[in-house]
Length: 345
Image (cartoon, rainbow, N blue to C red; front, top):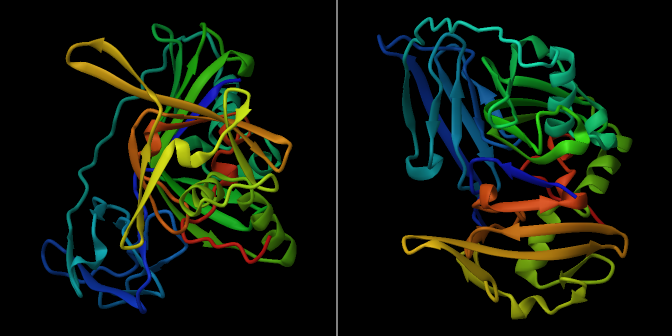
């Protein structure tokens, strides 16, 4: 079993409030209104484009503590950490300098086709959801195998456009970091030790039908979103998730403390080990096994003793919460918008 680390940059925190509006205007540094700029809440389906006057408005029934992304071709992206800090935003975009990075083609021992196959496996996934995804702009992806560290590294000069017909989403994924750690100088899937991808994303519904709605529900159940909802609401069940320490089922209350802080849940992990590398460098680590619906096995490792979860089951410290097994196999092909809520079980 290999481990998979997924980092999505942001902690999504929700508060039960009335309708929330994010409004503003986007201009150039010269004060010219910029139309057609994409404005969206990271990791959600909530977004819009600026009109001829450069104005925008996003409305939702819930307030989210996530990034607001403003993007327009030819200009530098703007990322706002707290979109609700102001009632109206005046956003100035700066022209992006023409940065033509020279791509050095080196002989790393593998063809682009081989590297792209591994990239898709570890980015989209090898399950049916991952295989249903199509990358629409593969040419924008740069792949390199680091022979010194046995790592496949990827980057992209534009957001990766992904069409997921199984779930009915188009995703624009701005890839900040990606690697696959191998156990040797190999490109084989069986030699993968760990993979990680980091970035921001925008979801768009495409041609929604009843089957796609059902597929979304199926993907949600048994996902990390449901797992962390189970954790904060203490709703462990043999029909859902069961927590194990080694091969023994355990009471989660003995290992986790949950504190509700105005709709945001602070989770503290108990009964874990601290590995001391030296007097100044201590590493927190706790690992558990999981069984979902009596059949789907996973492993979860916490490299942090404290993190936060919102009502939607989204967490902070995603780069320090590592999944293996069934949950580790769930990649971009299984991603749902952060504001997704299931209709039923």
